[in-house]
Image (cartoon, rainbow, N blue to C red):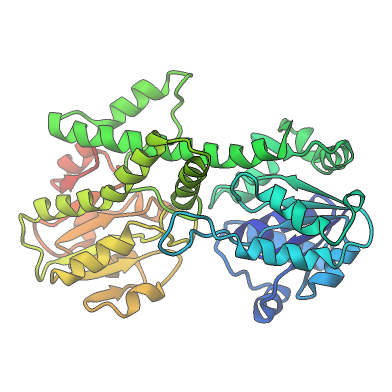
Length: 432
């Protein structure tokens, strides 16, 4: 099939490369001329394991193309995926749909035969209704079908999630579109993916409800971890004990920093706004948002407690600064608040992350990027394991760190408390 992915961000590029790998003819469109040129030369704008190889392979096989010409790309395609950003609006909880509607108006002019217009971007309920309304002002409804097909890609696991999805959700009441899309996804359905056909509004809500529920699980276990620290219980025991209940499940029951990234923060806010719009108080999700926002402050309080209030002139090292491992995504990462706060209090902060130096920290006084783990932690008073990269799971702290009585604060509970005690390392975890 001939597919057009509008937007070469996380969703558009990963989905485009994977669709091409399934044998489709895919063109990825972006208005950023330099970005498209870099993609043609094999330069990938995001860090995602396996993506560079997949893009190069399918670009060389001519199944994957890149273009800045939206009109030409849409005209030649049968199925158009809208994959542009829907960030939270400044000073509000609303999703900013300006890019969605701008692209919709551009698509409208290139509809020369029947097209399936798909929102792959995460959009609030009724967005598809509005897209249909915009297009139908200039084009008869028999020439297009607007469908919701949300993505469920985890950063760092995106290619595997695309190829082996739990489910494929198609939101449309149009039988023609449903048949075409079921055929498009047939290689994945044959591998065991569940294909679900719902109404368009239901599909839009499924995405928000899914992310809100997962955010709730993270926030729940973090709050239980707070209680564990007060009563001398190990949160790992609790996570295992409740996770083995099939009604609950063990995934997303890992205590640690506040949730971050491109989805959970904005999607929880957006669904609450949708609830308010339809006069429904989503009080549980509102509480989740509030608890998560407090999470980083609690961790900073713990750092202050660990250092007995003596933060000034302390050498504090961060291992990892992205919101999770296997991604370069810094959006809503706890490090964005923790590092500046500690530096402001007079600490000397070093950090290392496998995805490299971060521009956002360059202008902050007393914050230094290090090229490797050893350089970052060599003279540390306190090492904070912020992100669960594999690189950090087998460090011989005693042989690397030159200071006596150094402390390790493990926000991901990577290390065994008993082993660290055996190695005579002053160690703190989360919920322990």
